[in-house]
Length: 183
Image (cartoon, rainbow, N blue to C red; front, top):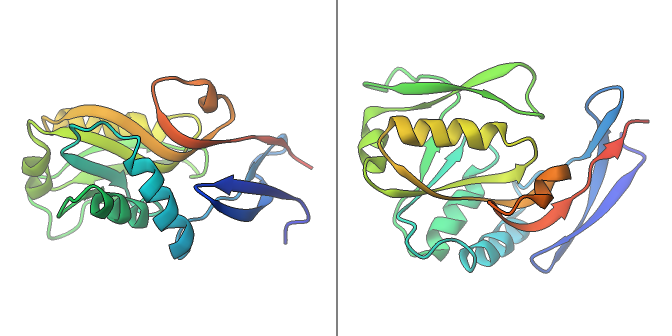
C-alpha cells in the first residue's frame, strides 16, 4: 500500500494518486482512469475542445485508453473509435503489428490492428490517444501502426504529460504530471 500521494487536479476533478516505485530510483503517480466515470467523462470533454478540428478517427492502445477514447469519440460526435490490440486475435484477418515499449509495461509488447480497422484508418486523419504520455513509446508505436495502415497522424493527445513530456509542444494534454524519486 502506498504511503505517499500526489494530488491531481485535471478537468475540474481532483484525485489523490498513490506514488509507486517503478525502479529503484524512479517513482510515478499511479493514474488509473479505468472505472472512474466522472474523471474519464470530464477529461474527454476537455480534450474534445483541444483536438484538431479535422480529426476523423480516434486510435488508442488497449486497455487504459479505451474508456477515454469512447467518451472522446462521443464528445466529438463520432460513431466509432479504434483500439490497437495487444495481441493478434483468432478473428483478425490480415493483421499488422508493431512493437511497443512503455514505462509502465515490463518488456515489450505488440500493438495490432486487423484488416477491418486498417481499412478504417486508410487515408484518414487519425488522433492518437492515451491516458498518459511519458517517454512517448506507446505513441511512437501507435504512429507507426497508423502509417502502416495508410492513415495520417493529425495529433497526439493525452490527459497527462508525465515528466519531461510536459515540455513538449507537439502533444495535446490537459495537465503535467511530475516524476518522483523512489523511496
